[in-house]
Image (cartoon, rainbow, N blue to C red; front, side, top):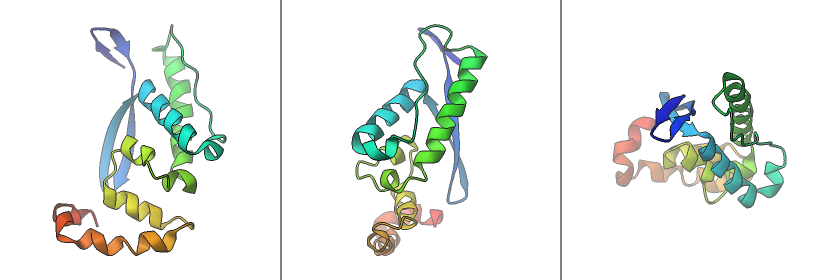
Amino acid sequence: TKSSLMGGYTVYIIELREFGQLKKIERRYDDFFQLYKNLTESCPQAMTKFTFPEKKYFGNTSPEVIEERRHHLEQMLQGVVRCEEIVLEKSSFLWKFLECAGECVLIARCFCQKDRLRYVNKLPQVLEEKYKEERWRL
């Protein structure tokens, strides 16, 4: 929980590994809600599997509410990263939310059954000169 001029708010920390490097991203409830909304619009069928914790206008920084939200948000995130329709989604809402580099997105998409060959064929592009600064990730 952090404070600002507007009062207290909660920041959820997402930890992920990108090619062995631990990465921590801070997101607020509204950031998760925007991701949920975007994914629901772009992948409505896939998102029927996931629920989103309701907005609370009072008491939203209580430990119980924070823990309940954390649990639901973690379940949602773990589910959407395993859903091929969302992983392959063209607007890359998930990947932008997670601040993943293009190489990471490309490799994640190679693990999907659908369009696997298309993404595998793009892998050599990662070795091009314009990706020179990102090569350590491989």
